[in-house]
Image (cartoon, rainbow, N blue to C red; front, side, top):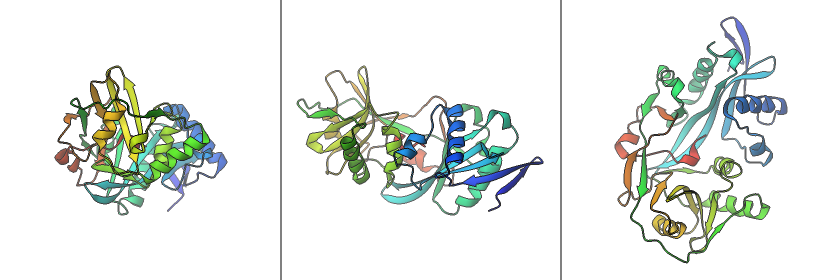
Length: 300
């Protein structure tokens, strides 16, 4: 792979898979912070940035000025193991925009990975919906499932976990790493991505159901609960876990994944602000045909 890239007469250097390079990682973090309002440093220092998140960056004067990251994610999709690539952290420094840097990086990544996986996909914001079809990406619908008819089980032993406690962090990681799958499209062998969420954005939304040895990542909002995901090594019915999670105020359960048995749930077209799924694959129609959604905790 040629590491010297000439774009409109300006010379950039391609850097990739450099997480242990302190200066480049700091530069990537700075651009991510400016663009998206977060960074990867805590994830790295906590030891969860492994080999499945690979930034591809263009640098100028040793500064990261554009990036496209490759996320290697294994899924069970309708019972079959698949290797998918999710493109994420797509960004360009404001002083270098509209000069073709993102296009150059996406071309490089597609050439490198499209024959090494079963699907490449990404989530786009509304300002670039016309950009990704130029690379063969197709806008794709997702479907979300809700439950309104449930049998609340009183007396369930539900406990809020504190992931900032070292022992509880290890306990959470062990269950997440070895969990059974409750989804028609379930991420496997990627606890590092889940921990990215749990160590930061969702650290206050982690609950433990003792009866099922289950961890439930969920958010209570009035009479609604959004269940991002459920993890347990014990064979249990998803609905039994949900029934122990909800309280007397809850009237609607919204799932952040596609349940294995959808017959009990209401199905709705997923509409998210500033988020659209694009798939670069002839099999993109599986999401429409089977009414699927990527698990929220698999978004990178």
